[in-house]
Length: 228
Image (cartoon, rainbow, N blue to C red; front, side, top):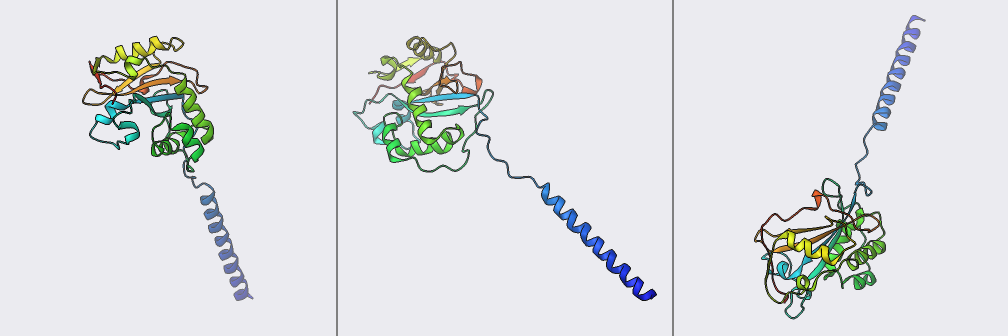
C-alpha cells in the first residue's frame, strides 16, 4: 500500500507540473507583441510638391523622360506629389500594400504627373497613407493642383531667372490671394537651381500655412532655367 500511495503522489506531481508549464507557455504567447503597422491617420496636413521641370531635367541624376524633358515640350511646373505631412516632421510613407493604379486613373493624371512610373510611386509611397482610395487620392491631387495659379513668368520663362526664395514665394502668394501667409515654400538643389514649389493644404484641401517640416531653400539666389 505504501508503494502504491507513493506512485500516485509522483503521478499527481508530474501532472501538476505539466499544467503549470502549459499555463506559463500560454500566458507568454498571449502577451507577445504584434508587429507594428503604420498609422495612416498620423499626419497633420498635405504638402503639394510642384517640381520645376527645366531645372530637374538639367540635373545629372534622375530619370529624364522625354515627355517632361524633351525639347519643344515647354513644360514648367509639374506635380511631384501630394504628401501627408507631419506638423513637426515628415509624414508617414508606404502604409501597406498598394495595388497598381488603373489605366483610367493614369490617363486622367498624366496631365498633372508626367509619367506612369511616378504616378505608381506616389500612390504606393504617399497615397496609401492618406486614408483615401486610389481614385479619391488622385482626385485630391488634381483638385489641389487646379487650385494653385502659377504666374507665367515663373511657369514659362523664356530666359534664365535669378530670384531669391522669398521673391518666388511672394510671386506665388500674389497670384493666389486666398492662400494665407506662409502657405508657399521653395526647395532647391545644391547647385542653386530650383527644385520645387511647395504648397500646404488642410486635409479638406483648404489652404493653410506650412510648418518647418515643409522645408525651405536657404540659398540666397535661386536659378530658374527657361522652358525647353
